[in-house]
Length: 488
Image (cartoon, rainbow, N blue to C red; front, side, top):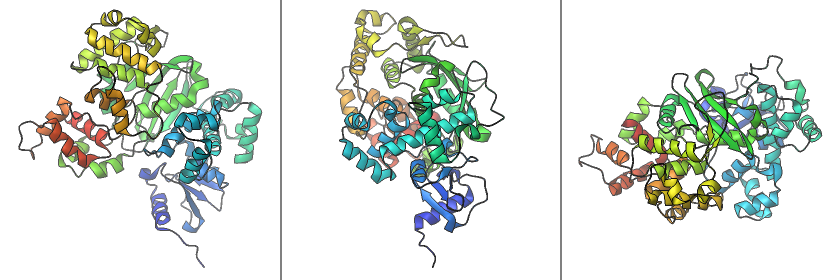
């Protein structure tokens, strides 16, 4: 008698047989005849359907006794993130939230009891928070072993293990091999000045358009976009460590390439989590396009720039300050003033590039400055006061929203701050807080883009009219906004 195969399993098997990149990270296939689990894009011979078991996460596959494939490397798969409480907690865990803190501490941070936290994660992923954390540590360690020349001791601690002994024991127990046995004899070339790592994404990816967007907004001394070499560079302050990172694109491999300062080796896990957000690595462009292409204007722009991402931020506070500086001024003007802020109040640092010379000033630093001091960069005192007060809000933990909070509630909290209006709040929610449905409808550029739509008879689209039209774009209104800006 043949085992029952669900409709979803049929869909997953077809995606596996087709090596469909749209499903990369959406599911993992455990192969019962080998005890290995793979990404849908794995290039090995497709096994029989009766030999496949499908899982929604690497942790669930490993909890069922499967080991990661050494060829397709499940640790490279882009995440399949959804905007719900469980996935928001998973993001925290994957960035190392349980490396130092306990489950009880994490539960308190997200507003749940430890019992509720365990139940939420079991319902969504089929494993406990601790099992999720262990899988992420092991997969990240596997990534570092295969992509870097870091020592096993450095890898153990960078992955969140408390000791090398614990790392070795769990690796050998879970994967039935020693960590050293998977280190490639031909390790990728790595300069003495940096660590090289890779991040995979689901194609297509409009890399040049994303770089152009960041180029116009790069803050002098903090960021640098080299359009000739097609790369992004910036200074980094993270968990008491300082350094720099460079991001470039390997289109043939569908990966982003990272070059990271050696001084950041102990914070690689949270660092990569930030880079994933800044470069919108987890987006599924096919799913987004299928929804938005129902609007002819958006469909036309998508055909010109397939795979357009929403540029995020490396640090929510610095993006928020940049947004405040951008109120009622041009992009170029705001970029100039933001550079002055970095140069005057930021902390100087050294990097391999002359254009990367400062870290962004901390919330505490800006909160302690007088309005008059901030205004010397060339902004009105009212805007200087908004910066000072927003810095104090952030220093008090104001930007540390609990997972699962609604977009409506975030906008309400931000707009309660002096000098923060609807446009600024929506822009912060869109780029810094990664709400895919945030939409700054008051933006004149968006209104202008829609007014140019030949199917519209009105001379100028109002904010109210734009919001009404944007209802059909939910839950991807942020991507619609980028498409409209790009159309200009």
